[in-house]
Image (cartoon, rainbow, N blue to C red; front, side, top):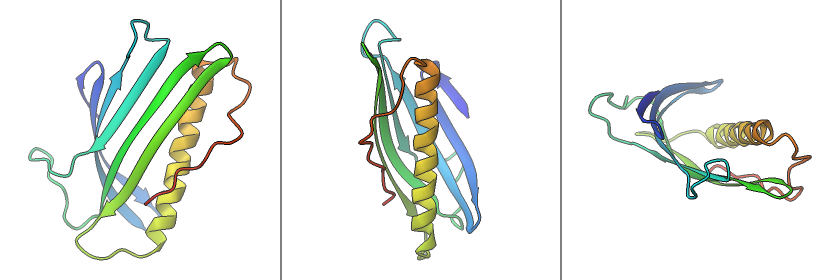
Length: 137
């Protein structure tokens, strides 16, 4: 992780899965739309598919992703909203197993976001029961 400034980071990584590896280059930016940072926080991310300093390995699939999430304190606790879209870019075709792997990966990310929300707002008793899982594309 390279910190660009106190609200921006650039993440480069190789993610290991049972069926293989994928690479990830992700720019993350945190915003506070109000004067009170504890009131609302927005995080946006976007993949970087060309990097001169840390070149992409053409032999590994690249995780192409875009997402945003909002943490907002409310009178009853905290509201969490998220959008996420992922796909794999590869020079050759990938097996259908990768679709399942990405769906599981997205669920892990959602669980981590929910855990963070509860750590920041422990008085929240539960998540909204109608949470719709994000599907990997």
